[in-house]
Length: 398
Ligand code: ADP
Image 1 (cartoon, rainbow, N blue to C red):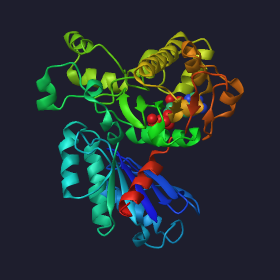
Image 2 (image 1 turned 30 degrees about the horizontal axis):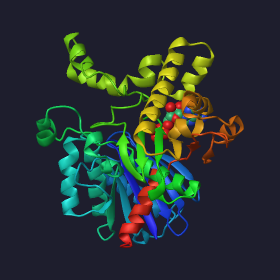
Image 3 (image 1 turned 135 degrees about the vertical axis):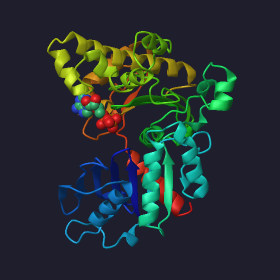
Image 4 (image 1 turned 45 degrees about the vertical axis):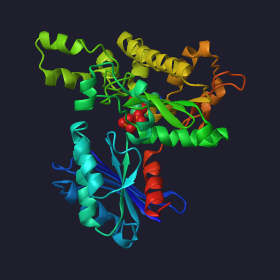
């Protein structure tokens, strides 16, 4: 079975074509600046290409990508009929969509209803769905929601201590994001630990540009760090994470507009805001090593908050089989992993420096010593493969 995975952002389309017989990637790419000076970066078996293209909207962009997939020179399939299913990443499923599902009118309505909660994400996700339905009307389509894995959080974890009507009337609660990544690493970690998914208790930390953490009990999410929006929780590349909500009206009283404050908390805060130089952990590590105090503080705050969240999730879980680190920073930054491990010393974590050095470049494995009471693992994430597997399962009617 061949599955085409599509992830539409406001001005981009990321895609991968999988051959599910061995889960290999036949082609993948990114169309950037849809609606402007669009550029397509395509990577297929016979070769790569990068070219300026005309993509005034998502529908035109998707048609272009499909043309490349069947192109006689750089294409990897003869005809789009060879695609058996399309899997779409959809950010917000709200309280209604608690699992991946086949796309029909009812599901499209649910995605529309939740656009209010994810105004930057659900509309482009929907545009991608409509574009694929137009371009491939006979191919079944599946939506895989970022929020779905986190729908099992109990009310005591997902409700905010605000007036009940805010929840009942306005749906104000924690939903969480990155669920597809947390689910993928949960399943993979269970496999690596030699256990059934329903038997594992984990703390999974997705540390990329966006960062989130999930407490997993018996294979199910019971708490999570992101909130009603992705702004809550850990410190991120450009997002502030946890913050006293009174800062918002205070900054309004200092002369900023609501839009300016919101932009600043989403785009100018986090590692970038504190360091004043970059949202990229590699830059901060270089600068901190060269003696830059602000970069060092940003890095220390990042680690401190990760350790604090792990500590709090440790206390709400019946046991912790492993702390699982993933995302660009979790998978690659040996120094951040070491610092997290040192911070978890009171919980019995002991780093194995040789293992920590060895793990990177897509490798999975434990970075703590055999004698460590708390195990830390690195498990590279693969959200696209998770979407492809769900699509295969639903299209095959399994
Ligand atoms: P996104 O959330 O955009 O998918 P990624 O998961 O790719 O982001 O993570 C991006 C982050 O990973 C950046 O802060 C980047 O600096 C960090 N990163 C990637 N490789 C390394 C590395 N070798 N060492 C330290 N940090 C790294």
